[in-house]
Length: 501
Image (cartoon, rainbow, N blue to C red; front, side, top):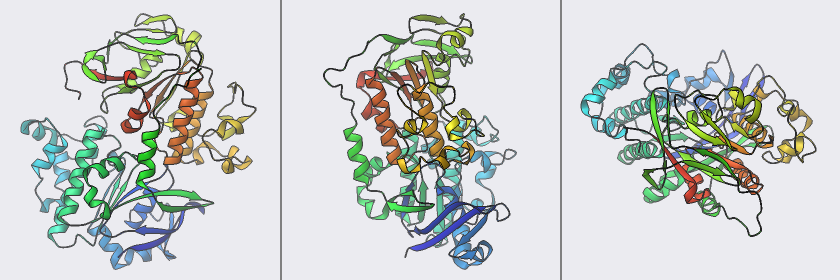
């Protein structure tokens, strides 16, 4: 039996989320997509009783929040469920070891499954895992990906406990971007563990994600379970949010269609914009660049005008650090590269970037738009001081990624901090593209976007490439960018002396 909710969440009378009909499909796995900031997390937290009514005003099914929480069904959702938070540091206690938190409260009723632990930490010995469980979750240890896996283990334990009590159909398990810091290898391991639990005893599961490539993994590995799996997407409908079924074939067919094709007659100067020598050292570690198709073969990374280059590596290895070395934002111990014909080594003065390179030869769009944009500026002010090339005004720039109906004077005068995460990322990208640079580095360019926006970003990248812009892509969206980028333009970054595969 499915349950439908109308939900209204406000902050000081300002609507944050208003949705007339949100469907909780009981005993099904729902993968929930939608742009960052549209309300996926808030809706799920509201249903689970995790919103502080002193900070936000919540109404569910036209009831006050306190009345909703007193209902038996609401009590059971939380008691027999679990919420895996997007930012695990906000949930894990910094003064308790990981082991103690994995056995805290009701979780003590079930011993930790060592086999699940081994699967989520491939290659670690029993002794290494014992030492790992004694770690305190301080800011830099363990990593973000490891903290996410710990929270996922907690949820898996809770599933075992409620299943044994015969209450598996009474709870709600929400996984809020649980694989955001994981590469596809560990993502697939966790999803497999989750589905194995579901097969043993169906649960009501909401899996919030921006990773549309999960669709391909599910269809390939679990086609027999598609009757129990839902793919949905939240989208904006006037001043409200609405849900719709997401058709898997739309994504799968699009991925097949995006292979870059160079048309006859394409003309621009095929000069080398960047040649980065294969070995470099930073933060006391040694790294090397390899051919992605043969990760034992070390090679220099080369970007010519009109190239799209894709740099891969597991989370935390150093892809963003590598990009910041090229940008002159991180001082490495040893490196050697040529940027637009200028040789740069660790001995070079930082002034060369400021005087000759930034915004002229090279630019970078950073992963986190909140850090890159002035949160107090207006939308129309994002492009202040930037020559808009052939565009007449800011509205014309926005049309590359925003729907025409949203580009009003009201929107142009909105403060950046009032925008959704997906809208901020679009502005972040557009500002990078209008800079008159020859080489552009894009770090997680489709982060936090819905499917229609992802398609627009890919089209924009290809449009700029055809004009001769060199582009370096850094992204965990391997299925998309593996399809999009030519085979001989893919590189792999690894730390020397370690198994980075």
